[in-house]
Image (cartoon, rainbow, N blue to C red; front, top):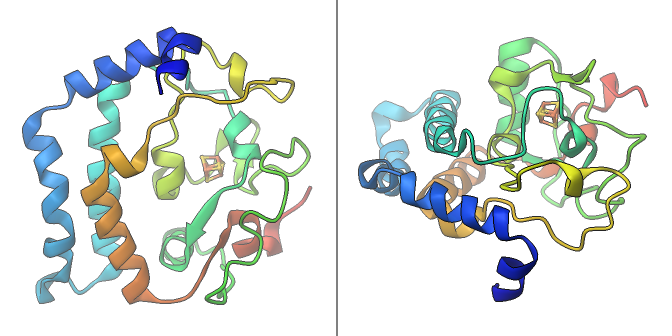
Length: 201
Ligand code: SF4
């Protein structure tokens, strides 16, 4: 990681600032999410997912001012967007747009180019997310800590971008997410596969 620190000093500094900003109480809260969702009174998986999304949004609010991400930038919406069945069905429940039932094995995740300028997410509309309130976890936690989006651009030859490391920053939230997705069932896939009926390249 020391080479990343040297190559991306602004992003590195912003990551440190972000970690320094996070209240201890908020960080601790994520470790209780999985247990909370296991309780019988929280049997509604979509309600639990909404609670998890609310937590992620509060967590990510501490990155405001420390990232290149801004309204109008949608490079990452052209990359592979992996999500689980529960997230796809949650979008369906909130919008009425039908999602496919995915097999246990991922179909397209990792199979296509990671970024394809000609295959945006089907929910990208005029540069903005049409389902912003219901967008999946991956979209909520995708943050480029650099000063500009230069490394995200399609012509970028960057070998790495300093993004949020979900595994180390959000272990409790990831555990809760993993348990929710597993108990709900279905598979995982790219958002284009779940919503292929509306996909119009
Ligand atoms: S769901 Fe929204 S934020 Fe996520 S990739 Fe699609 S358009 Fe972008």
